[in-house]
Length: 457
Ligand SMILES: *Cc1c(COP(=O)(O)O)cnc(C)c1O
Image (tube, rainbow, N blue to C red; front, side):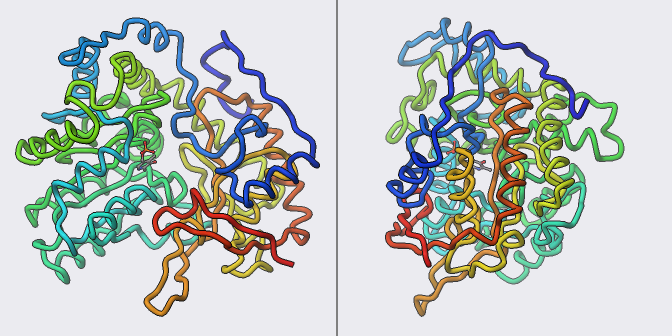
């Protein structure tokens, strides 16, 4: 057996349809070579994201029937708050409709124009929310993260020396908070070690600066700590999570990830002043603080999902499923970010398609090929997502051109993932046929969502 068999069985099914090569050729052209513009019903295996795509359990669905839709003080809110406090330990907790809303609230109360925000690597919405408040995102990940083939047990770590230097160069007055993203999504879903969390926390404390965790995939991160970090093998995942958050002053969370729901998020903080301001904005933008833009039933599903998301059998199966996909691709020589992360496998499109120049978006070209050849939807994490305009109008590209195959939680079987592996290997063998792309329309922020492209040559 390649990885632990599913610790669940199927009770409800959702049919998926396979389209023809001709249909997909037309659909991807009509979508402007942007898979965000494709109808989901035309996708066979959807690995666009693991966000909000989880299959809920019967326990969660039963909780949805227990929704208390009172405007204020819903009983589901109390369950939500109590569950979060028992795992994360923070004093003040408010629900938001998703993670980016929590980020917006946090940066609205914490950031002034020109402030810097250090992070291991900002996730795209986090970066965009910092920029939106006219702040400057700093990515201070360890150098190992820049080498896709390099193995490291905690490749998501922040480099403490880079953080210390940021404080010395810019001064603590310019750095209102330090963030750490667990797992580090943009570096390949790579975990952060407990030791690194302690180091980052100690530096932030030294400069009297709040330390906030982007907690979206904290459960997967805790599983990696248990598996890889000396001293944690015998600890329960709940204990590991409690220790991890004990070093921080708050967190932002997208419940669409490790809380196993389709919508939801929260902001948790220990600082009363920040939370008071955030609550006022929450009322303005999202809703009253005991529902924050969610229905009572959604809050119940989050509370129950958080309990299930820390289950060790579930996490062993989940991490194992991603690992098994990696082993298949490795045997065929396909380059990808190693080791495989918690929620996704990141193909190294730069190494797969060296003939396509950066301005023709090699990673997006690979995304298009995956859809056209096999009906698989992946996402580009490269120049299209993270390219930036320089003052002279030229483009500055991120270090890597990656394609993320994000695995929805509890959704696809191992045979679906074998299909994916076979398709990737087939495309890899015919990679010299893949054409580059050219931008014909782009938005100012988060352009990858709405960009329109055309094929070159
Ligand atoms: C998904 C995600 C977010 C944003 O959450 P949304 O619910 O999509 O708004 C922030 N940070 C990380 C690391 C994420 O993966």
